[in-house]
Length: 123
Picture: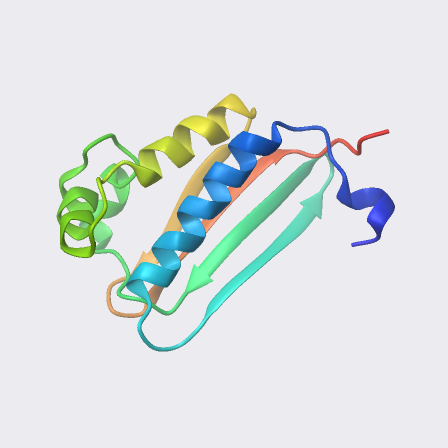
């Protein structure tokens, strides 16, 4: 992305919290393989993603993974030293930025977390 398109109007603190939570989770749950970060711009929306080849998430748990104190995230977080709030905070911040967050995942194959927010180039 050229520099003149890389500065956008958004709440930097909230965006950094979202991305740091997603990247920390990818690092925490990926022992082998890779972690990838990227983006795509379409119309007035930028979609950022964090993809990993970590432990993945059971399909039955995907609908609750962003809820505060969800059992699945809480169990994983306790085993890895977290509080179980990272994904719910990421969802809350994504919505405050006017966007949304979602995940595609397969157990034992990895996950890809997406966040899309309005894309408005800063002047």
